[in-house]
Length: 178
Image (cartoon, rainbow, N blue to C red; front, side, top):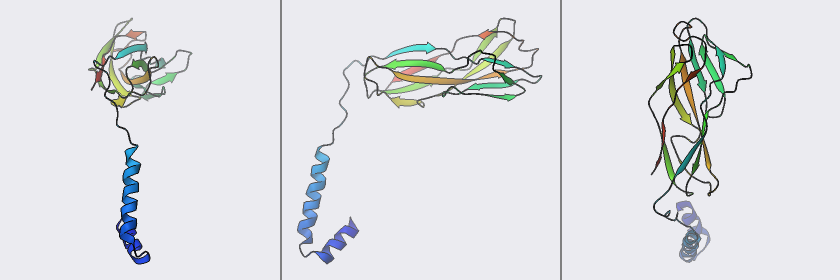
């Protein structure tokens, strides 16, 4: 604005009048701005878990490692784990969130959980990041829903500690309206 003022003072004799006109135009342009309307009270949030967290098939080596499912649906392994593509699906957990557009939602992951195996043994599951980040503002207009995908990390030990088989358990994720 300083440079514009200097330029106007040098080139136009009635720069003060022009500056006032520009200021009025700037103020009029801001009149069209609208603030967010307060949502109706009470705010009702509906969360529907549509898909569980699935790690798929993998082979474990002697030292174990981790299997990571990311919110985008990709999978990574570390240590002596080998990802197996035997037709078994893997995917992040998926939740549908329905509420008024403009509602601020925070996601709080529960603690690590222990999954128990059908052949004995246990694995540790750490809930990972959400596709929306730890908080987001809803945009879908009901009955449409906002989709949230949450990944996780599975820690796998040696074959003696974690024999082959199916492992299952449950985890907690809390959706908080702010």
